[in-house]
Each structure stands twice: as structure tokens, then as C-alpha cells.
Image 1 (cartoon, rainbow, N blue to C red):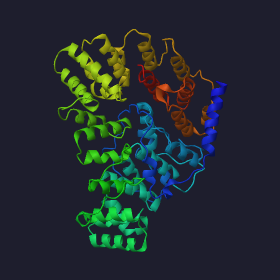
Image 2 (image 1 turned 90 degrees about the vertical axis):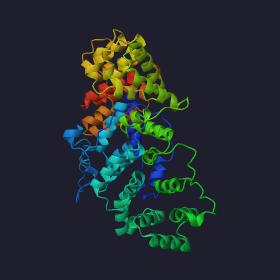
Image 3 (image 1 turned 30 degrees about the vertical axis):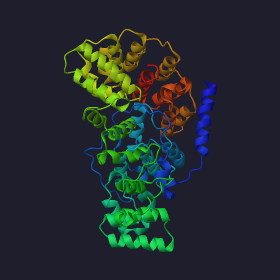
Length: 504
């Protein structure tokens, strides 16, 4: 444990000494941040906090880092969560939060990012934390709450406005941002953006004049000018070669290229760009794969993906279509009255979705409906896993649990009694952490130093490898959470670490 504590201390030290370079100054910030596809295999997120019904009020004369969508009473995040932490250190951790973490971790990150929290006691007059929280959402492709945060913050500077403009492009809700840009030309992230907004607001002559003037004085590249010109008047450029695919694809460049049916990059698109496929009614397969990626990061309701799976009849086999067929067969089996058929289709659907770390969908959609069915042993085992992944796990899981040690250990976590002894290193780490038997680490000391929020988000970062995380890091992270008043969240994370492993 001494070595583990030293490692955690070193991690905090590295974070503390990182130089904070504000990415707001980069014109192509969004594409720089989101350009590369995720390399960590994503796991399941839970259904996120819904922003439906939330009224957004524009705020003035506020410290923008405080802005959030949910007060402490709703989010469950203390208003003084950041305590005496260093603002820039927090911004680094939030901005670089791992993606594709297990569902309960993703859900907790989202609660923190969307909560109203006072800035650190020793804060700044900047909006470093707000910017980092926005980056966190945009990296995950969660555009609606990002847009709501930006509107609540009422961007009055070019730096936050760039984020708002990018979000508005990707949500296809550009009117407000373009009107703000028209009234404040210095807000324009690029000349392309100014040209786009002039056209969007119906001033085509001004857009064409801005383009020709920019070309004349050399303030726009030939490729940018060609793309903007084709966007304004495609017929005038029919004989021209298509603009080259830029190395850095911004939201605006992407939208312009899409409107002209130009080729996409060979690599996976950033998560934030995928909403356009859903909005523009792309082909069924494209919409399914886009929705699958967004659901993994809690950036789309799981019901949206279920509706897509059930939308039509798969005309082929392999990968996507095998998943579609498996979910449809399972859905139909519930109405068949044949429990053997239900068992077989449950096993098949579970295996298909587990291949892409989406088995949580079955928990959200079908777990309660599996009650009162006489399932085969293989299906019963899966039903238990789905029950513990369901938001109502405490009520559902005991009804599906077998007498096996693995099941009973999870039940003991849910009931908080730990009467079932641990039999594996991970179970021992979890048991020690949740019962308060773990040795204190640097993160525990951060809590005692009034840096509670920093300790929690650092603990979540320790779990970046999910079920494959080193058991020492698992014990440290869970014990820190339990020590800091997040024991229920730690329990849910612990259970998901146990059931979402590669071999479970």
C-alpha cells in the first residue's frame, strides 16, 4: 500500500505541475480536441441526467465558473465541492477525463460537469472551469447540455463564443450564434464562420463580398476560399476540383463539406459530429453506428438506439445487422410466451451487444420484463447481470441471484452487509475500500485538505481502464469515494467493475 500511495501522490504531483495552456486561443480548438477517434474501448454509460423541462435563464454579472444546470439539491454534488483546489489543476483533470469509462463513472462525471458548484476559494476571474467542463461534454459528444451551459453563461467574449458557435453548427441551431456574431464581428472564429453566418442570416451579397475581399488581401487560404465559394454558389464551381480534405476538420468545414456531398475522412468522426447523421436522416446503418457511439458516452438516450434497432428489417448479415436481428428477436420473444425462445434470444442478444460493450442496453430496456419467466441457467445468469446494471438494482438483483459466490458477493455490496467473504483480489479490494479498511493515500489527504472534488475526479481518473484497472488503484479510488461521502456511487461502480469485465 505504501507503493500505491506513492504512485497516487506522484500522479497528483504531475497534474499539479502541468502547464495550463488555454485552448480557447486556438481557432480550430474543437477539431484539435476531437480530431482523433477514441482509442479506449468504450463501455456502458447509464441513462444520463435529462435536461428536458429545464428552463435556461441568461445570467449576468456572475462568475461563469459557477454556472451549472442543476443545483446541489438535485445533482447531489456539494456546492463547495472544489474547496481550496487550484483552478488550473482542476481544469486539466476535467478536460482530460478518460472517455469510455464504465457507466456509473460516466454518469458521475456528467453530474459533476453539469452541477452548480462554487469555484475554488482561491479562484480567478476567468472561466477556466467552465471551459474545461464544456470541453468534457464536447469530447463526449453531449451537445445539448453544452449548449444549455453556454447560453446560461451568456458568452461575451470571443473565446467562449467559439465553443457556442461550434455547438450551434453541430446542432444546426445557428440563428442565435450568428446574430451574436453579426452584432460583434470580432467574435467570428474564422472568416469562413463570418461568411457562413452572413449567408445563414440571408445577406448573401455581404457573404460574397467578404469572401472576395478576403481572397484579395490573402486573409483566407485558397482551399478555404474554394470551399466557402462552393457553399455559397455550388453551380459556379461545378468544373472545379473538389476542395482537399483538411488535416484538421472543424465543425464548420465538416458541415460545409456535407452540404456539398464531399468525401468524409477515412478515420472515425469525432463524437460531437455524429449528431448530424441522426438529424439529417442518413442511411439506417450510419444512424445506428452513430447512435451506438453516442450512447456509450451517455450523449444520447438509450431509447433512441432501441428505436433505431427496431426501425426496419435487416437485409444483410454481419456486425451491425447481427445486432439488429438479435435485439429484434429478443423483443419479439417477450410476446411469444415461449420461455425457451426468450432464453435463447436473450443469450444471443447479450453476446452480440457485449462484443461492442453495449450490453447495458439490455438492462435498461428489458431487465424488469425478465421477471416471472422460467429462464434457462445461461439466461438466468445473464438476467442477474442485467439486473445489477439496472438503476433499480437493489430491488431487482436479489430476484435473479443464484447461490453462487459471485452473485452473493454482489448482493452483499447492494445490501451493505458484506457477509459474503471475498474470494478474488478484486473482491478483496472492493470489500476493503467500501468498509473503510484501506490505508490512506494522497487522495484521502486531499479530502482532509479541503480538496474534496479534486480527490473525487482524480479517483475517477484512476479507474480509466475499467475492469482491467490494477486492483490497487481500484481499492484506492473506491475508498476515496466512500471516504468523501460518495459511497453509493462507489458501490455501483464496484458492482459494474465486477460484471463488465472481458470474461464475465
